[in-house]
Amino acid sequence: MTVHKGICLGLVPGSSVEEKYANAAKLGFASVEPATLRTADEREQHRECAEKNGVAVSSIMNSDHWGSPLSDPDPDVRKKSLDGIAQSIESAAVLGADTVLVVPAVVNAEVSYEDAWERSYASLQEILPLAKEKGVCLAVENVWNKFLLSPIEFADYVDGFDDEFLAAYFDVGNIVAYGIPQQWIRTLGKRLKKIHIKGFDGGTHAWVQLLAGSIDWAAVMSALREVGYDDAITAELRGEGDDQMAGIAQISADMDEIFAME
Image 1: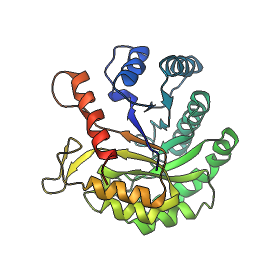
Image 2 (image 1 turned 180 degrees about the vertical axis):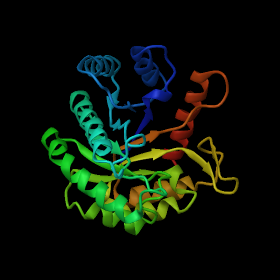
Image 3 (image 1 turned 120 degrees about the vertical axis):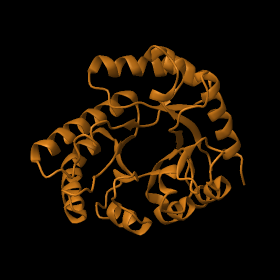
Image 4 (image 1 turned 90 degrees about the vertical axis):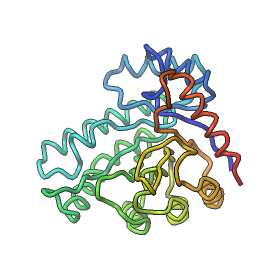
């Protein structure tokens, strides 16, 4: 298994885009994950900074799916969400990323589970042709949205599209509150496109640093090897302390330790 170390670009210290890419490289990250880039100028700036610093862009984190969910009953809200995904797809295409992270739906008092499933499915089917045209995979992520609450259901949701350009983005830390990460990894298997990691302690139900919580990282890495995962593993957490560079450097070191676990 060959995985590489990534980080969400917004968490990297730096007062400018160029400084963030330079610091990501300096801290030992092979790839970064920016959020949606709205303009052609932004995309070109990020592309140049990534190339200059030898850092790959593994994926784009779509920005509009929480404020404007694909499951919203208002068609105008869903259209706004799809427009944001289209911007994310274009960002990925320009930066050489093969994946856009998408939160597929949000279940709440106004949106039933069934409606969330049907609306998100229809919306993703609508935008999927653009993703395929650009060679970009839409990867739906497990988040605290009261949706896709079992690995079997998550797998069924992805399988319903029957398309290699619609896959799973699995967040190891997010799942600990209601699941066992290594079990989800084995169930999702070849559906996995990208991986997020963060620390979580199941006992206190709190976000922590990578090695401080209750996640069995050796079991997680074993499961990833078992299913043949060989892509980016991207950190999505802030470093500890006032020294931001030192905090992210520790995350980088923790990831090295995790990757080496048998």
